[in-house]
Image (cartoon, rainbow, N blue to C red; front, side, top):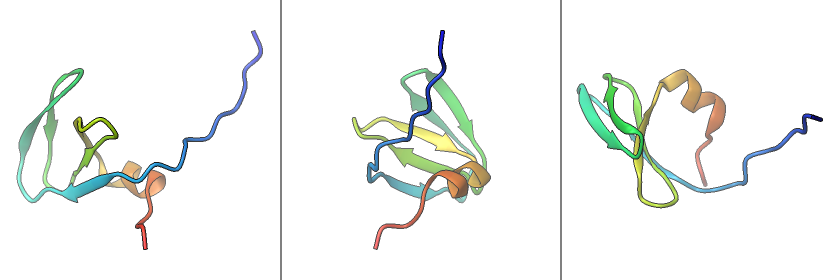
Length: 63
């Protein structure tokens, strides 16, 4: 099977950085978010946490 490369489509998301520990109810179950994690709202309204280093590598601000 040949592997192919893909790029994420440029989708604008909403996110905020949490200042408290919290549990996020995701489509895959409950996930723990730590202080400083980003809480992302996906294209279908679902929410999930993202660690700051991964967020910085994946997303950039929209002007």
